[in-house]
Length: 474
Image (cartoon, rainbow, N blue to C red; front, side):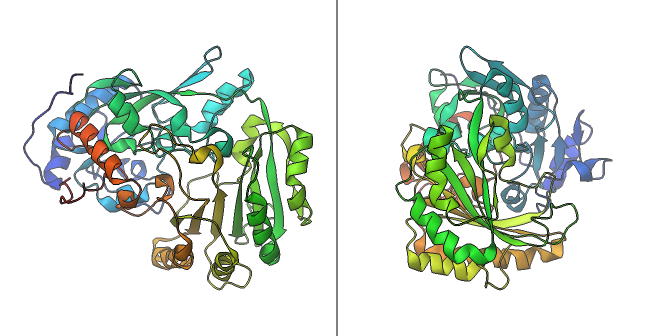
């Protein structure tokens, strides 16, 4: 296997990098018209100030721009939508080219092979829309406006996950532009080490992923929806859901959220100004079996019950994620089994009587195929549940208070933490430190040394330092 060619450049200060990038076709630098708009991520709380920004529309643009950035001494930070942009912004981009991939899109469905080839920054909604007429779907996340690449490179947690595993494990191959501007095809048979690393190792550490081929699921429709109660029911619903999830059929993947909505006119009446408990997800079973499985939850008499057979594309809207870019902060833990004391702590932090609770506190059910090991950088998800606390920040001045609120929930549940964090839910700089075992970290560093020997790639979650060694300079 040949290693990518090195492009040697002298070290540059941040100002020198911006100067070197200025005037290169397709790159915006600070002060250019459009720069401030282009630097905005989906998460508007992420304050990104890169030395330059490019939004290539074709593979040739990516190759040209990456090579030019290397000659300018710039680091390269790939980003599709920027849903998880906080770590990248916090890590510092003043000597980096932010390579926005939202204009590099396309999807090709191969019905016979039951695969999708997804280009650059293509969104899940576009992939599922292309697959649905063929009776197919994929291991997508809870929001259709998330790009496939970032989601998959961090693992990919789906409402199909307990039955079919992580989305990263459904990938057949990646096309990657390395930091020296070389196009590499990574699969089990070609550049296999890179293929292993990209499946859950945060691809921004290794190159710019410009295409992904992944397996599709033969599902034209699915039994899915949500159950809704006023938050006053949380002391009953939370322990009932916990007990229901224990030993549950792997065909079922659900989440439970305690939500607090402001009184906004754009929200439907059943949400606006209310505090709620919602259980949502999917049941991969015939309707009669789904009804049997959901029976114990329906006995809790939800105010609203939307679980029903729907076209598979409808699952993208069940979780009701924000439909437009918004500003928020979050904290996350992986949790083990939740006893009564753990549930009492969670209710105290986010239940009906909690003071100053964040807008969203969510538990997602794990286990099943998500816990089955695979030969990938992210082999499996540990723990029984994920915890994600989110608060909205309409203005930057609200960020410190919101961070305190989400951190308070995480701290309340820390005694019950069990398992490595899930990178796609980690928004703190340096969050990868606890996400991989030592041998995985060492292997990831060996792969990076082959494909990014000059350490030009700038990832949301940089590789942790190898044990016993100082953190590498970036």
